[in-house]
Length: 238
Image (tube, rainbow, N blue to C red; front, top):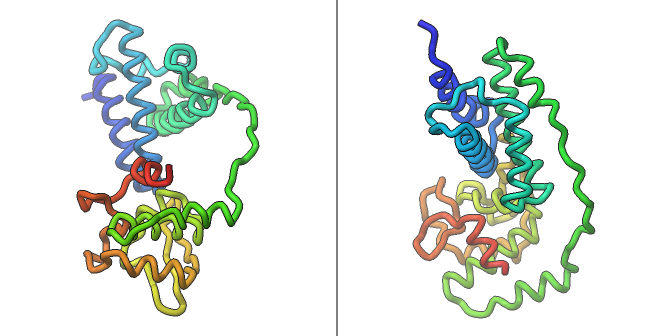
């Protein structure tokens, strides 16, 4: 028996996240959350545009003209900039590619979505801190409480390794070697790992953290002993 359009859409959404993004692409949790938010916003917009419930959407509703209207909506009504608009489009394109692989009967419909161009964003000068400024930030952490030791270790780790925030927050005790040769294994995008040397100063700061936790538990944790989030790290730095 042929599945209904909504059943097909639900099944393809589920396989996009559970199979394609996680298993095939090895996407990070940050990417998965960003793609999830983009598609959720798109589906809500499509449903409101048609005056139906999200649960009533079908594959036929995922069309280029509707996607263009959605992109215009998030720029004009939600105040999203070009960069955010292009990120939302990248998520939708990725989903359209997944639809095309599994539903070739609507190849032209999905192809039109894939041909929607990104917008050129005005380039901005890259901002950065000079070494003495970074040192001043790290030196501003005063005190020996667990929170202060964590903040100092985190900022030193980011400065030392150049790791993305998500990579730093995913580091576990099993990834660290704090005796010579001091190093850390970072888990990058697409399931690609790399080893980065650690300064003696960074290793000392990391030893001040509670590392007697399970080997697969992230070492940077918040006041509730839960893994530190990107927002938490941004708050610390600010």
